[in-house]
Image (cartoon, rainbow, N blue to C red; front, side, top):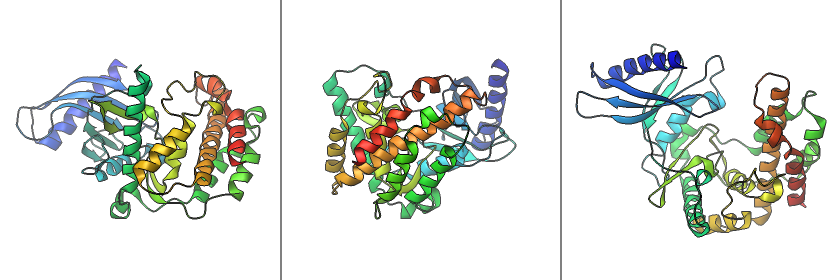
Length: 335
């Protein structure tokens, strides 16, 4: 790890000197950060010239040896976050991004470090946790109001639900998956396809909107983070996803959902009030069922990779216990 940190420090030094024009700029305190779709480091930029960025910053680089697409496309993530500057959606400030080979040999971005805490990491009085949760939901509604057409270059074309279903087909239709874990997934898939919403509201979608990806400070949201699977698409994808991770009936074992300040019904009510638009109960239930199906399929796939020695992560053994229940819960929601 020390050698890797040293190399990253040297590469960062070359980057910041090239970008700032300060030949004496220094990089200090390089520290690895958690993350699944790339490599992240916090660091401190010391400048000898005034103006421009300095202080604590964050570097994210794409993983080595993978195709630069989807969650590994860190430049796309940077463009998406940059497109939200000046809106009511708080994001880390993007400073630099690019794919110049001379720095890291792969795409990267640098953003400002945002000091904050996650609801998933702290213990608060229930009333305060609920208040912050509602503030986060207001931020979600603000994201969905953002004019995606004006930000087409960053977000791209809307992704239809049929394409989202096809992507999951690619993961589910594999003979190497454990049949006991897959359970009623095919049955839920067919019911989802038969009842798919025809005219969902389209907008900017975070894709992984849950308490662990929201930073709070001073009683407000200071940043939404982890835009790895953001897309332009049906906005209720985010609402269904948030409901999933606050629905204890979807999981085996209470330790899976450790932070649930609001029930799914309370989340939907708060969102409808903030969004100022009618929210169809039937559509919400569909997107909740789809979210359970989506996470259940991802669980089946990752558990298979772990068991076959392709991607060691024993945490999926624990999460995998809930996969059959996720599919059952989806069928319950669809009626």
